[in-house]
Image (cartoon, rainbow, N blue to C red):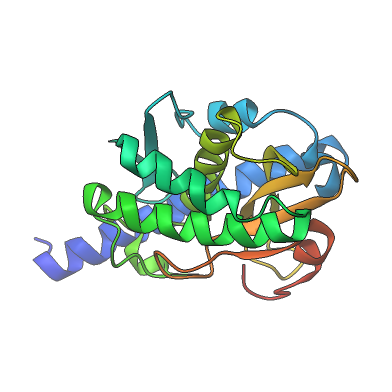
Length: 224
């Protein structure tokens, strides 16, 4: 008969294998087209469908957690929350660079706002396979999906002036020495240049890493 610690260890190992397999399959599907940069094409809806996630509605955002979006919590934003979100993004209307800074601050604020409902206050940043399947903990699939949802919520209300929301992208495939990783993406409306909005490396409520998508593909060579 298995002891309780042994059962828990084996259960956790199964969750980790499931998450790694899902990440690899998602990335493989993207790479099969014609390379990582080709993943930028297509609408965010394709990402939601592939991950069984739910796009935001007029007042609700369905937050993914538990790794691989296996758990989903619907959060209703109050009118006050929506006004605050709008005001934070309005600080960046002077230029694309200013808007990207505002996006970082607004995403961090949104993570703190939904955390009590989701149970993600203590979400561990970065590579943390020990918490695979744990409610409130998020991997890069959860993070990129949620960040995209927050950005779409803003875009659909006209809160963004200099950027549009693109489909998340992924990088790394083990064989190249990198752990599979995904990020949300925005694109400058004037230049068409894409930028990663990566919440995964940071703890809940901290500003995401924002950089050109080209730089994002070339960074963190071993992990993430």
